[in-house]
Length: 188
Length: 198
Image (cartoon, rainbow over all chains, first blue to last red; front, side):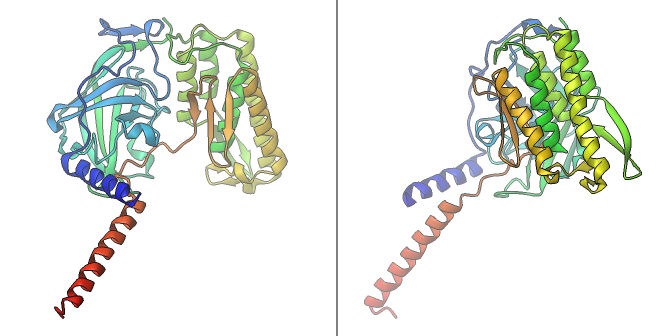
């Protein structure tokens, strides 16, 4: 058991060194829908349930490519980047909050700069956001995100410092504005 | 206030009688919109002589909206009216409790966990029994509320908005590594002593 624990620690340290898990494809995504660029009627969408992989997030400038899960419990955060279910689905015209671990998929988030593009392919449309802010915020300070926003925007965060272990007081936050992607028509 | 809203939300969800599929196409009907609009509304009243604004947190309302949107069809007008009436009754319970004792209001937060036991229990019992009627399960562990559907998928939780996303610190592994290192050191010292190196 001790030997197994040692191996687990070494494995974790290796992830820290190498930047984490490798992710190869979008095959995890459920019931992919193509062809909707400006709007998408909700009646044709397959909405994710808690725990579903429903997209892929990419930030080319930081060499980030990660599966996107709906829900953000500990188990899901080990598998990819995760959307908090207290924010609406991407394309709903309000704030989307996504998080990921600082020693796996978002290990290089610190390389993101204002103006960089964030792409999120979902099972109902492909979205592009442009980074507008990169800040370090306190985890218990809610002023850096606005769940009541009336415009589509993305807030992406991970624990800071990047090499910290365990619970940290700060979050590395990337705020991005909507550029393109289908708006969900909930009444159609 | 968070826990109170969570339980109310659970109860109002189960008042609506509709079948749903965990991963399915959905629409957001007019009656569901009516409920969501009501959930997102505010009401201000006096507590202890000061204005208090009653508002269900946006992250809770969003979960309700996401749940309605991901289900096929719309709820009936009667169900919508029933949900709204139920939430108003819940709010009345809060008002009554705060009117009796304004100390339950801590700044902007209602100290639900310290409400009279009977009041808390009444709200929780109502939520749990109502959830069972339409196949939803509400679990309250004394700190968090999670509502799941018949398939076990989470449809609501009141967990913290900002999660811990740092590398996990494996204390067990650290102890094991330290113990192993200590053994190596002791063994090396023992061998060195035996070899009369010091």
